[in-house]
Image 1: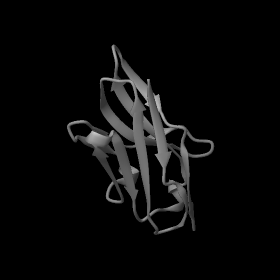
Image 2: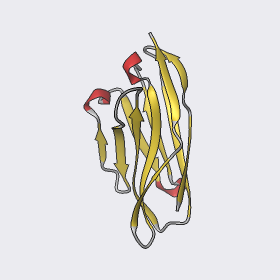
Image 3: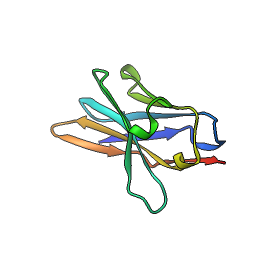
Image 4: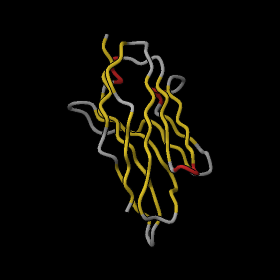
Length: 118
């Protein structure tokens, strides 16, 4: 089992920046990928960015050029630097990890609110 603890959400004005962090702990052999999803009211949860243990990165088109995902494998921690924030970025952001025990499993954090005011 993996536990994912997020931090760094909050309220920011449009054009501002926030940095999210997510630390993984628990019993697992390895973490294949870590990433961030978000869910706005009335909308489905969507991928924001993900990074594999080898450093391959995938971004949603809506955040390319504004958000940067990074990972510290030694600390099992993933970061999301969010710049040039827009009101449409307002959502609950969830940390995600695909990890290995004797099977391949998926874990989710509890979510952190990001609110961008216009």
